[in-house]
Length: 149
Image 1 (spheres, rainbow, N blue to C red):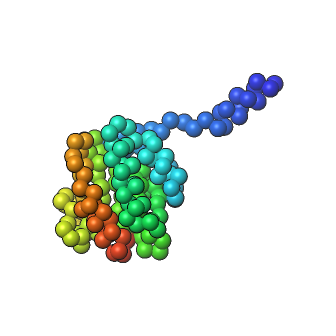
Image 2: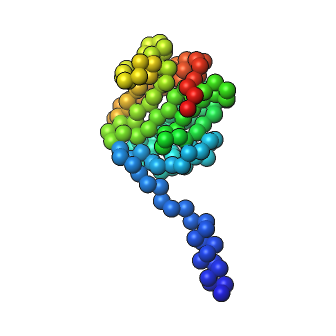
Image 3: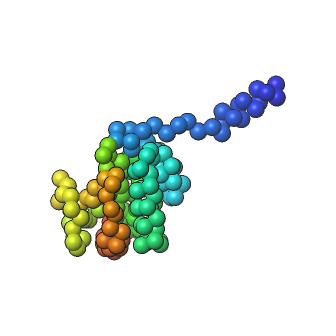
């Protein structure tokens, strides 16, 4: 009987492995706060994890009052009462950083979107990340009205 009880407890505390979607993007349940974002970061494979962790840390340093969530298998960053200003997700060959009001940033992030206001930065495996420019974009984006999602 005691052995059966231990097995039941183990089953209740063991989390199933995170499913990776196309491009290695982790499938994480919708959630708010640091915990779901941490689960997302922990599930990212290979070199993309280091890039995403650098992004997360840079966002926290640049916008200390940032709020976080995971929606649609994408970490989102915003400010309480002001909406979401950016997010990122994994694509097969790069990390796609999305600035939801990116067309208003100076200079604009380099990659266009089908949505006129949105701009992207694609970070490939061997790219050198210009953290100074990225921090400027993050600060500018956080100062603008965000998106309600």
